[in-house]
Image: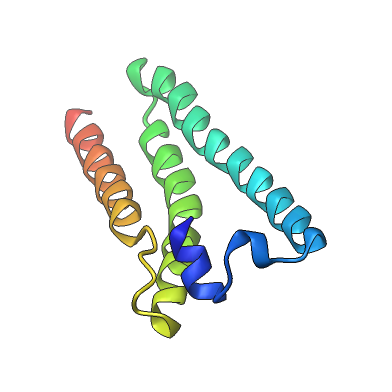
Length: 109
């Protein structure tokens, strides 16, 4: 991502091959977390549809546990490199949508 290069001060090609392997490994782990974040609320939406009163809380908890650290990590590089276009806005949008969805599901009960 361009903001990674801006924060690191190096392009991908300039990094040592060992560092590239470590970064790719971490990105694959993060990708697995993103898949989990998408699949968990999807499955919990079936419980929500059936009227389980705990389901909105579970979805909000999973979203907060994943999106809170994402926002923290997205804001961090901007503090040292304001020109780094980290994904703060999309992360904030996901947090807002999660809270709005939680509120609507609580109101519907």
